[in-house]
Image 1 (cartoon, rainbow, N blue to C red):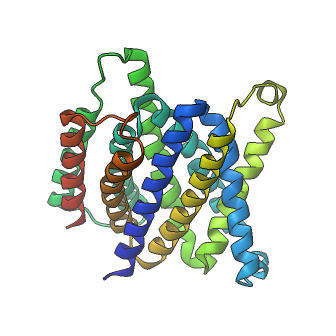
Image 2 (spheres, rainbow, N blue to C red):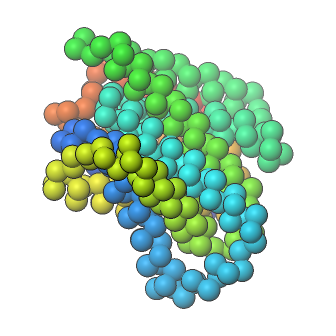
Length: 293
């Protein structure tokens, strides 16, 4: 199996598990910002341990300054803004529907790959994009007890999160081979996001806001953060082996399947399993498959 495909699948599985666990924690504590505050630094500590355990810490001093800057921007875009938007969407409309909308990220990935990375586009990719958009439209429909405001907020947050993840992935792909180590790259992105996050919480208006995280939710957020860190490690590794337009479709198609499986196993009593949502997921998976062929 192509290594880019293999790591893309692993990324999707890890992201799916992280998203479903976050849904469980958010159902109990209802604080997306608190979830980000807990999970992002957990990722930075996880990669710091990996750097020290694998003897790669010294490699940080050999990373060019502009690579540091690009990875830092990617970290803030993906691990901070993207995750906050993702958690907000998951809280508002559930992991299944949010996950289906997040699968629009290959559209952005193909666009960025075409414009900035000299990658190609085919007629199958165009048809695939149309199917992904159809799937996103299907899952955007609301439940009867849902207000329009909640649905619109959740859908908008998911689409914005997909864009943030795609931008972050494109930035990483552009310079990953100059870093030489996915672990080093991931540590820089997560530590940058953590520094900005702590800077934001040093402001009085955020510092005074109660996070209201229950103890059980805290443990789940930590687990979700570690799984998200693993997912980013697999993603960076996959991008070092293959193009963005290959890794992202494989990632989101595997995530589509496993979000549904994990949600049924863990969150079947709190998530959405309607015919419309299932059809939307199938449509997005079919579209991603066409983009991958």
